[in-house]
Length: 202
Ligand code: HEC
Image 1 (cartoon, rainbow, N blue to C red):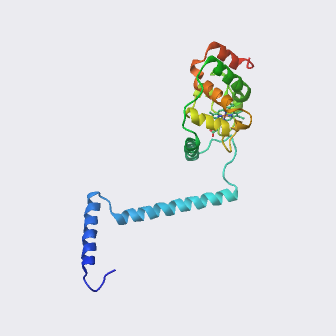
Image 2: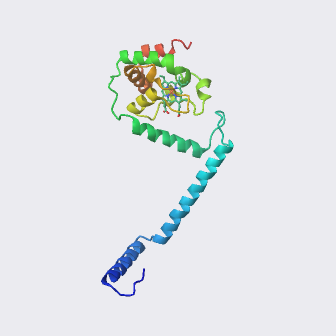
């Protein structure tokens, strides 16, 4: 880049370079160091991705549901799922009020279609739901960190590669909002609705 003639452009670029240097010193960051760090990290991730692909082809990755996966796998897939659901959900609020009538309708759906996996009450021990990987969260006990509209989206569309079915083929949007309303109010249900939930579980 060193031209023979000392042009004004060259001295301008020299000034710019020294300015950049000064600024980077101020920030205690050396561009060369950053560049090699980024390149090194990219190479490491590339290698990790290749090893993963190779392991997948060889069939050595664990696929069984009764072995607890690594923290990394659980964290990575968990956060990917939350981000995907958040992106697709409408973001709106539940259009259905938590009246006894709606809670009762939600309880009927929940008892018939959800409780066998997600548990019918705080007390019920549900080995079936816990035997999946990922396990079905015991909703009366654990509740959920998903918002109204995210829960609606999950129930309607299901979660791929898990035991969570897409209920959109079986339930109307109103049914789904009613069951979402029920799940949101598990801690403060009227007695009649709690009784409805336990109906067939005695
Ligand atoms: C055959 C078992 C099964 C049935 C039946 C089922 N689910 Fe699920 N559900 C699951 C599993 C397994 C997961 C966990 C998926 C995951 O973590 O990736 C899940 C996840 C969910 C979640 C996300 C909860 C969270 O905090 O992670 C909600 C909400 C949910 N189900 C609601 C329902 C509702 C409502 C019904 C009934 C209409 C239902 N499910 C029926 C298996 C089931």
